[in-house]
Length: 151
Image (tube, rainbow, N blue to C red; front, side, top):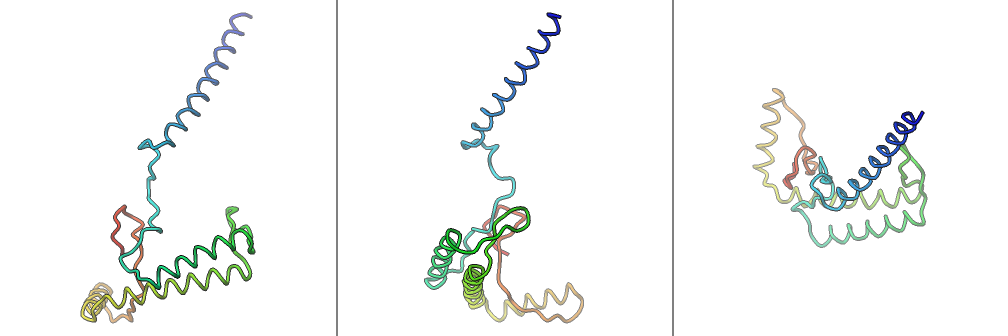
């Protein structure tokens, strides 16, 4: 009987020790250990080379409106339990997002020469082995690399 109590006590002690070690390790890792580094970085916030005063003002307005609508606007829970804007809040934020995207694309397009765009179209048609209706839509962060280079 004593042997059985010893085994149960030792098992309980091992579980408590394991939990304590796990909690301590969790705190250690979250304080800057290389283990806490993201496996795949979030490149959505990587600024592109294309910005100007208008784009920065739209970004600031979008941030402000998003914070306001998050606090006081219409929110619903979507898939996975994440909150999403709804109603007028969704329209207001969506309008600003579209305006920001449009301005960034205009600036990106203005930085490209017609020769460079013609070369890209030619390369795409060559790969597709047919004529293609190609239009520049913008750039984005590369989700497959840590590099700041946009695609």
